[in-house]
Amino acid sequence: MSNEDKKPRYFGRALAITAVVAAVAGGAAVAFAQHAQHVLHGHGAAGHAEHVQVMLSAIGASDAQKAEFEAVLTPAFAELDVMHDAHSEAMRRLHELLGAPTVDPARIEALRVEQLSVIDVASQRFTTALAEAAAVLSPEQRAALVQAIALHSGG
Image 1 (cartoon, rainbow, N blue to C red):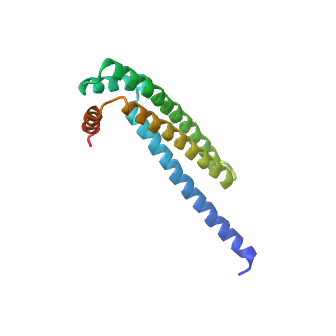
Image 2 (cartoon, rainbow, N blue to C red):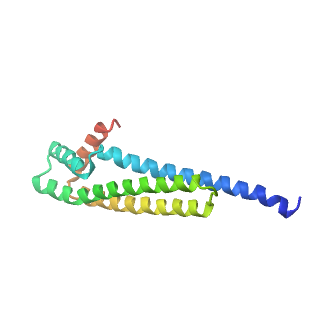
Image 3 (cartoon, rainbow, N blue to C red):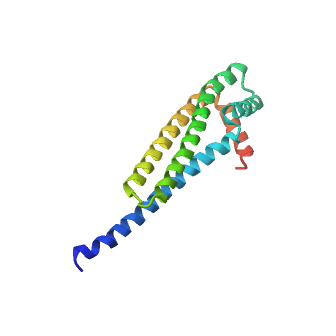
């Protein structure tokens, strides 16, 4: 078999692998965005802040602790709202790329890389905010909060 005969088969395999990688990355992005939306219960940062206040009251957090906790987490949850909206736009772009007369694996890969970067930045920022907010509470309060969250989420 000549190299010319191998090119179509190789291109088909490369395209299939690219599609699978894009689907997996897209699935990871969707899972993260859906988890973020689940955490927010569809109410965005403001609705979640109210829920956090109730949980903090239940564990005996002071008003100062509640205010500091909210000051750290409210912007972090708002960033998740923005990320969710951006992900919806990225999915629209992916559908356009996949529905184009000619599929461009390089553009699909660029979109995948872009989405992984967006998710990574959002995850890093949110993790930093969680650690900063957790530091406001005593170890006993953190343990009680973790237990309350586990009960709330069914875990």
